[in-house]
Image (cartoon, rainbow, N blue to C red; front, side, top):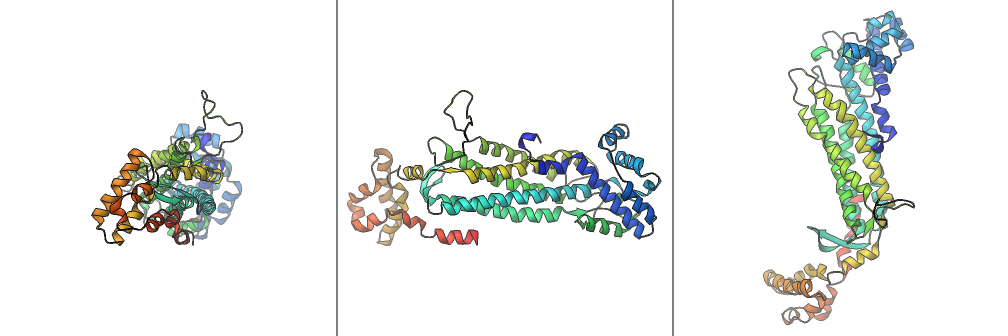
Length: 430
C-alpha cells in the first residue's frame, strides 16, 4: 500500500524486518522446546538465542540464488550462529514458519483494526448524543420520507460498527492459530509439544488439524469480515457525501484553513475524504474473493495461495486500518447544519406527515383504501402546485367529515416522530 493511505503502526507489521524477526522467534522457541525434549543440546538452544541475528539485505542476496525465502533466512541465520544452527528448523517445514508468522501478523493487524473500530464508535456516539433531537429528513429511494433526527442516523451507523467490532474480535480469535506439525502435518519428525510451546510463547493456539498449511477457510473468514467492515465504512461515507451535496448541504467534511477544493474553481468544497474512503473500501473488499478462492488447494497444499496473501494481506489490512482512522476523524470534525436540515424538512409543504393523516382517518372509520386516496390526491397537489398539505386537507370536505380542525392540525406536529428516540438510543448504546 502506498504511504498516502498508510499508518506507520500498521505498515511496520508487514516490513521485512518485522517478518524475519517473527521467523527467528518461532525458530528459537521451537529450539527451546526441542531442547526440553532432549532432541538438541540445551546449550545449543541457548546459543541460538544469544547469537541469532539476520541481515535483510543479505537474506535477499541469498534468495536471489536459492529462490527460496525460508532457506535464505536459515542460511543467513547460520552465518551468525555457527555450528548450533544445524538444529534450527529441526523437523519443520517452511509453512510451519510462514503460516504461523502470517497468523501473528494478522493478529497484530486485527488489534489495530479493532482499535480503529472503537475510535469510530466513540466518535459516532459522541456526535449522535450531540444531535439526538436535531430534526432532519429521512429519505427512502433518495426521496423525502418522514422525519428522523441526525443523532438517530448516526446511532444506526454506531450499531453497524458495534457488529463490526464483534465480528472482528471473532475473526481475530479464529485466525490466531499455530502450525508446527512438519511436512503434510503428521508430526512425523517433530513432537507435538514443540507446536504447543511455540503457540504459547507467540500468543496463539495450536491448529487442531493442519496439513502442510493452516486451513485457508480461516483466512477467508478473516478477509470476508474485513470486507464487511469496509462496506460499513463506505455506507457512512456515502451518507456524508450525499449530505454534502450543494442541493442538500445538511453536513459536510471539515474544510481547514488553506485547504483547496479545486485547481480550477476556487469556491469548491469537495467531500474528498469520504470519496477516498469509498475507494479504499473497494480495495479491502477486493481481497475477499481471492481469499475465498485460496480455500481450495491441491491435496495437502500447493502455493497458489501464497502470492495472493503476500499482496492482499498487507494491502487490505493497511487500507482498512487507515480508512477507519480517517472515518473517525471525519465524524469527529463533521460540520452539521441544523438550519439546512429544517429548510429541507419544510421543503415539501408538510408531505412528510402524510402517514399520520392516513392512520388518523382509518382510526376514524375510513377504510385504508379510501383514506389513502384522500391523502394522496391532496399530496399530489402539493407536488404539482406547491402550497401546504394541511391547507389542502382543511379544504377537503371528505377529509374534514372524519377529522376536526384541531385533530388534523395536531397530526402535523413533528415531535410525534421522535417520541421513541430515547427507547432506540437505550437499545443502541446500553
